[in-house]
Length: 422
Image (cartoon, rainbow, N blue to C red; front, top):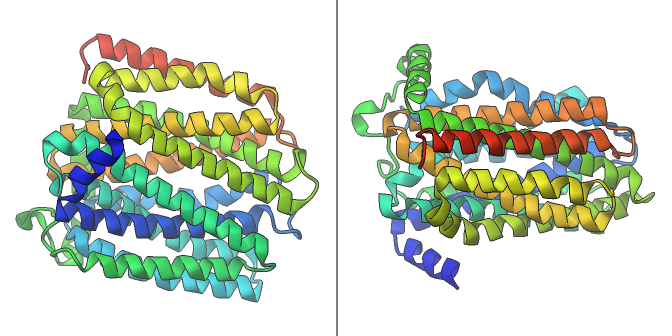
């Protein structure tokens, strides 16, 4: 199987192998933690969840980071990335343990969200750092392959972690705190795994590292402005970021819709709805895996921009065809296809950024990338809250998402033909 052969090639690289281990453990913990939070907020029997409540929860968890996110990139371009993985995951293990205690104590929602926000904020440092570090352990000829397999493997690990969290939640009542503690243990394992890499291996270059926090913070504003100017000069990177942000918006809106369908439209029993949501997540994860297999060959034939055009175009056609019946079976098919499309476009986007952005600016650009993801997802949840009825069935939302996918395909096709072919 080609994907297995490619993985064997990459796993011969010790640096890649160790960075991948950190990613897998970290993202499996993310999957556990995120499912624990989602089930606590959406599927707790005592909570009457609405689209507005889901949007509010996403805003509380993600928008504050959107303010500090660009500053994280400046620090990533000054701090040794290995140390970010070590101390970031140790901190997340501690904070997740605190969240578990808050769940047991049944504290007010605002205190619970504050704790969850802290874990989410540190998460962005770690994921942006992993993306920025990948070119340090893989040569340029293998970078597309690595971008196909490494993030996809991480997504599959998150999916597996989410599946484990669903299983624990379904077989044991009042188990949200136990599931969060499982995530804390996995964060600790990721921190320990990072110690297998030398401190200097993942960069940035030593002359760019500012070990003093005060010096790094003092230069944050100047560094951020420099990162934005650098991105403006890298036209291809800016264009794929634009496309990926809109596709993330679409994915976020559909996520809220599926949450409401599982919660209210398809099953009267919360456990049945939760089980179906777990199946949808696993099927979407299979789509992410399929993207890792398909994307390298698609990019060889279509180019990076051409593959994004194809992904958005297919989504524009199939999303309404599968979504408008509002039935479980076609929605599950759509989960697979949209998983493949979203991950395939992300692989292309990651590669364009990594190859067109200088290493000294890469952490900042990936942090901006991450912030755009958050803002798009929260914006999608807010729009969905306005459009979705209580049971989640909204023809208007499905049509709007299809139109956005079509607009992305048309715009990227135009840019591809006017000189930004990659």
